Amino acid sequence: MSGQPITVLMVNEYPDYIDAEVWAAELKKRVPQLQFRLWPDVGNKGDIDIALIDKGASPGFFDAMTGLRAVVYLGAGVDGIDLQSFPKSVPLIRLATREQASEVVQYIVLRVLCQQRHVAEYLSQQARKIWKPIAPRKVSETRIVVLGAGRIGGWAAKLFADLGYGTAVWSRHQKTLPGIQSYFGRAQLADALTLRDYVICSLPLTGDTRGILNSSAFGKMTRGAYLVNVARGAHVKEADLIRALDEDQLSGACLDVFQREPLEASSPLWNHPKVTITPHVASFWVDSGIDQAADLCGQVARGEPLSNKIDLELGY
Image (cartoon, rainbow, N blue to C red; front, side, top):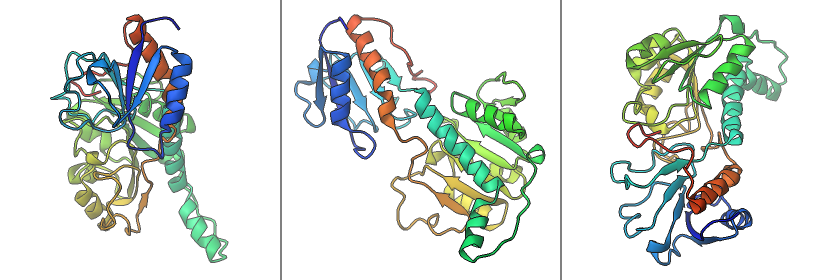
């Protein structure tokens, strides 16, 4: 791959998910002129062309990076970055691989089907050696809404529709998805939630979506509805969720994300009988983004237009 030498700085605060040595080797293999640095061994900040970060940058992080040409956020969203202080002249890029999206969609469908087909109840019965069939609710009589209709939410909605669920999406703008009802804008949120049996949150976290799943939202759903959140913990007002569960407005919730992570041991969510907790693993293999990151490095080296840029005003 031809082009000018480029220097890449990686910030890796999640070594369980990201193997920095693998990234360094693979990026250099694809972009031979690449020089790799791993935080905190920054060297001369003025030499850095690209920053790969997996967590929100601390105040002053980008100071003195006078040659910075792109910032790549390795997570599914960029809410960890303070977009108000982010250097507006620098493109902010997110990795958006099909493999990563597929993992999240798998998780969403898995959690709904486990609830629909009474998997937890059967495991309990097995432990007690009980043979007792439980009739699942017919999918044709089950209504699902997916909040967020992008590459993850739209894909999940299509699969649910193909399985026969009454499926809808809610998003910022109207979507055209065959066999799926589209709601859009804040004015249509209540209609989107009304009498839904399953609510899936796959929204980007912005000022408009923070706290969107609250007592008012839960009250619109079918009594006994089930919530799956694979987006961000701050979408959910946890106290409102616990109240809705305790009052049987919701039959349960599967949460992969939380307002504070790792989830504190003192959180009442841990011991709640209606809550399933997973440690932010709906998408696991960040390494699937190496090819895309290498392509981006090549684009920077060759001075080409960059793909997957984030709109700093919208936050996604």
